[in-house]
Length: 220
Image (cartoon, rainbow, N blue to C red; front, side, top):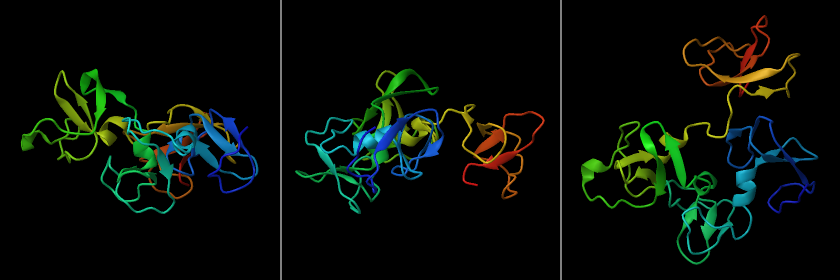
């Protein structure tokens, strides 16, 4: 149990695990460790609780501490997009919550080595500014993952993926359905959602009982 200063209510937060949820801060779907509000149905992932701790350091070892500034519209130094909530008081440096929590090293099938999170391009040739995963243009001013041995460079999102903290195949029992539901992401066959009737092409909850054909979008 702990009290968190940036929590909107007075109730303390309790540490939980193995529950599928959508973080109220970074909006990532996850079933990793989180803190849950004891009085309201609100969950904050452990990464965001750490990131929003006053004076937390950046993953690329920025020399000054970062602090939360609600509603700040300055650009993020990692991705270049506006809305960087974590700002430095001493210089013009800011990060989104998700960019703050990018792992320093990450593995991907595109390279046999671990990729290192990098914040600058040493290669001055413009043709090298592309992603070796999606093969699209890459902004050299944005953070990316790089392998110095193979000269592999990729978008951060291409390495991390859309749901980096969600374990597919795990169970979620916090629903009105009588049976436990399995977290799935269909690759080929897309059954219709029992709630909205549209094909389940993204993350969905599927009944664990083979005789029950119930499936529903995560958002539904």
